[in-house]
Length: 153
Image (cartoon, rainbow, N blue to C red; front, side, top):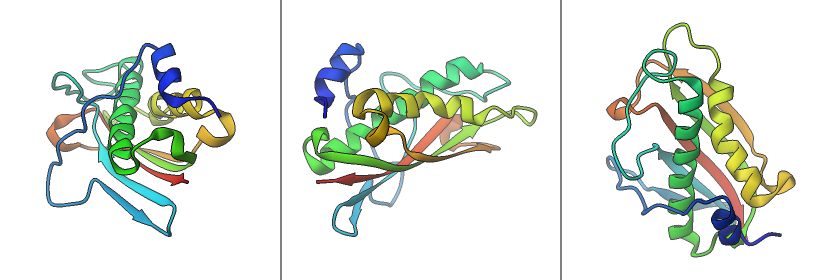
């Protein structure tokens, strides 16, 4: 397996600080011994980002925000397990897209996060099962929120 941190650097990316929780919940929860569930993370890294895809944000812009949401998911995961190289595989992601009523390309948006996982962990371990769904609104009017389940060592 590749070194995840070297791959991040190669991609010109770095993990952000762990995002603050937005309510009363656990950001990460281990279950079944080696599975970690990561609560939904938005795309906010350095500055607030808002928008509705297909209305105030293009699908290409939203795809970048999906990648940023996944970076936040990975930051939470790293805090929980200490080293992203312990990831055996990405099991599932669920991507919520703040969508205009006539926007139907949620899977395109979700590819931003999915592609990052494949780039970091490889096709076999990194390609998750996935759902991408359109939402009427998301907290703080963020464009994308992503949750995930990982299998770890």
